[in-house]
Image (cartoon, rainbow, N blue to C red):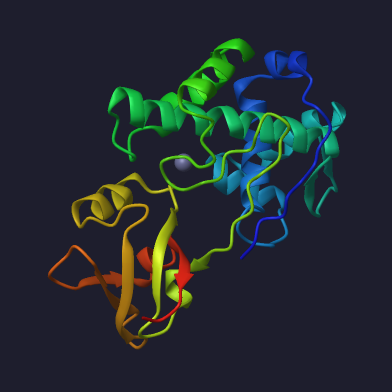
Length: 240
Ligand SMILES: [Zn+2]
């Protein structure tokens, strides 16, 4: 799946500082819901993502609509406006830079970064964010392979395939791992499934919902269930 390059208006620094953490959570949840799948985003999608009741999500979305950040039809879809997209991308950029900073500079595990990265992203000044970006060498992906928008909100292009959608004999490089389940991330770490590992698909057992893969380094095959195989994205390589 490819991520389109989006050119959004320049972020307005003041809007970021006067939005609450909760408003930022709504905007990033809406943006992320459409990041890897072209599904329609609804109030219940947002409620599920944020772990709140649909009525709470509905009230939160109404507040954002009043500020011109989202378009929310009563029983229909939720969409970010151009301004909402700009703000969401600015927040995502901060969160992913802080995730990278925590792992690279402070030795966090990739399953431990989420909460602190969200808190730091909200608290940091633009100046601190620019310094961290420079210190890290302007990274284009975070520790989970999620693309980091640049300072203008532009995302690096990616061509990724879900491991679950591959066939026997396919070879690829792990380019992204879904970061929503810390336990799964910890498991992947234990079996050496990390970004840039080269994997080959061995046996597929659709009736059991499993597939086995091997890595260049590992001597034994790794068996993954469907949920795990859907959480790993690869950049395909030509068959050897
Ligand atoms: Zn991440």
